[in-house]
Amino acid sequence: MDMNQVYEELLGLKELQVNQVVVGATQIEVYCESRLVEGYCPVCLQNAIVLNKRMSER
Image (cartoon, rainbow, N blue to C red):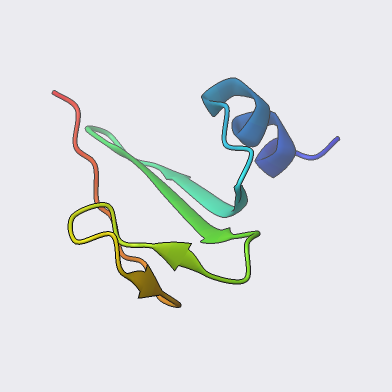
């Protein structure tokens, strides 16, 4: 099991594949892509091929 799979398991990301994790001094950036062919926008619920989401925890 590589580190990307470890992050997927720890974060519970079943529909996302983690490609890269960058650990900085004040933040952690997780780069991932969908395992699903298409998804839905969480705001308007329309079908979307490209989904962009940025989460910030403080």
